[in-house]
Length: 508
Image (tube, rainbow, N blue to C red; front, side):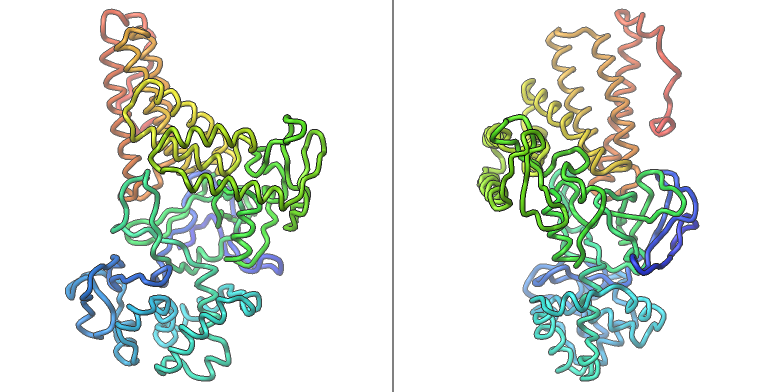
């Protein structure tokens, strides 16, 4: 469902894409869509065709009707193995063993179901971008020809005419370029462990949304695999709807390389064309000559042949910069993932070479926040966690403005550390209750901001569960503030209390 805020339009430069038809306020629903197909992202994944649960074990049950689709149990009530698909599998000679040996055949096979069962969706599918010509000379073309196309031909699923028309190559290109990564419930642990992507889904309307390294939308996928897209910022009428296909915490060179290899285009957005990356210096190195300037890429058109200091104008070769990054990456990869001291030592070392916001250092800082969260909350660790959160938030607001998971999680971690530290300080009589109340008021504000960012997350997702934690923490803090303000030593504070806050959500 595309809402009235936008429409599908087309031009020679961008092809088909979504454009706003009116001013779209932040948080407005732009699109809600169910997937056309869902399947494994890579090889070696066994899953239930009905409910998409990842399966483990030697003996895998199959659908009792078609005897082909793997299922978690014969009575699974999942909706994704449709009657049309079941009938299609029954009539063709594909077996469950083919899926177990080569799971990359599943998604293109599921697409072929629509060829005879739903002409409208089949036509919409084939209209999506496939970049056939750009893929033709890539290794993926040969891989598809051998492992998918030849198998389908031998099994009688496609004809020689289909091979001549490059139908399977086109379908696989469409899937690779337009699919969205999906998190499976079976693998979700908690918000700090990071997502596990083992499935992908194709959404016909969402596939039309263009890329920008600073998007204007917030994407979430609920427990039923509906893709829900909200405006992450205010979007003016007539503007393109964007989301970021890449990782916003990677540098220009790294993001553009990934986009070139996986999506077959060179990004020319404002961030990619700015050597400073919107003044964040995410890719920049410290100048080894003048010690004051930042070494940035001179050519931002994809060549990156030369880098130059913005202060002393000293030039450095791209190969030297890359060698430095590769060496630092090796040091980062060799770290003991649970050792705080090792992370801090490497961070201190790399700060002499890279800008404070360099993407390698951002990775270390994020790791450290997680380690400090898991460790015993001692005063020095809490202070350090606060410092790291305060360093990251301004950067996140630039590379992922508006509604942002990164901001929501970091705001929660920041207030949590500040409150824990204040509790220790008031217990040790380093601060009085009035000062403690001020910390709680600040935490109240940070929690409201965090909830604002996480409110659009599905309830059962890690971020959705964190949002519920925020609401619970907000209630606890407000109760504690009321209790403290009513105590005799806080009468002055009590007299300045604002209106009673009865609902955690009323002021968001």
